[in-house]
Image (cartoon, rainbow, N blue to C red; front, side, top):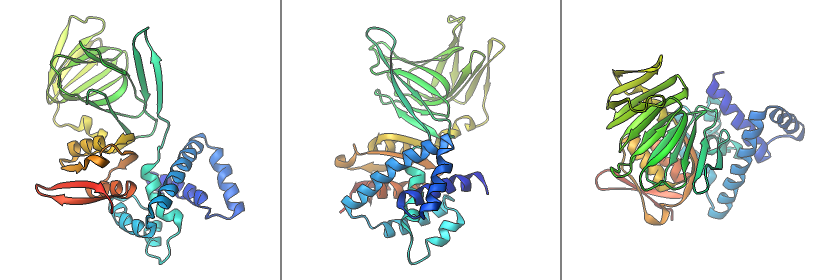
Length: 339
């Protein structure tokens, strides 16, 4: 059994417990095993919240879960997100509740703890500190200036609740990809332990996990980097170039490809984010033209897209938010409330 199948098995087991599809003795043993493992216990608590939410939505909207499963399962199978057992079970005339929703739980659950804490660094400045989980997923975070940050696992980003008029400053520990909104009058500054990165508007990948561990890859635009020990010594890095820090000095070279930033879209996680923002990121990374009508643009969704194709993403959003799609001129796909 590979890691993906084992992970899916955890979701199946927990979905069966939540749906009441187990005998009392079997359920008791399963719960005992879950509570003995801190990671599984945390995951089960999160799944319980989502299960209640999905059940409530089902009762309120009258969703046909059998039909929804049939529509969704073919997409999930195409993306390799279903084990062979579940693919065969969906062909049966009756599909248990836990089978229908296990795949949705797999994609909608928060697989890890995301910590949002308010920190005060002075009498007039509030900071938000975000710690991404230890799971290999990418937390997509939107800043209030419109910039988008993709946080790798075990990464901490601290930023003010409101940027000052002179600059936009954040601090980073770990690895993140920044897609910065251009504003020449308000530079965007990233502070890491060994270096300071200054940009106007561009996209780039930064990894900094210690005083002597720093690497930056610029995908678009140009950035300026200086060390904390010698801030007067600066180096410009342009698109396609990589800058690393070794033995107290910078080394710059031209990268052959953009593999340094490919990780960000492998498993994108959005936590309580608006549909408008989610579609903006999808369009950016898939070259698609997804739109949403104004009355549905501010609906919020927590979801993880794991190696998903664009059709799968569209199907998941439609089902989870009770929306329908319409293809319009210019290959535009528009989301709007279902009938």
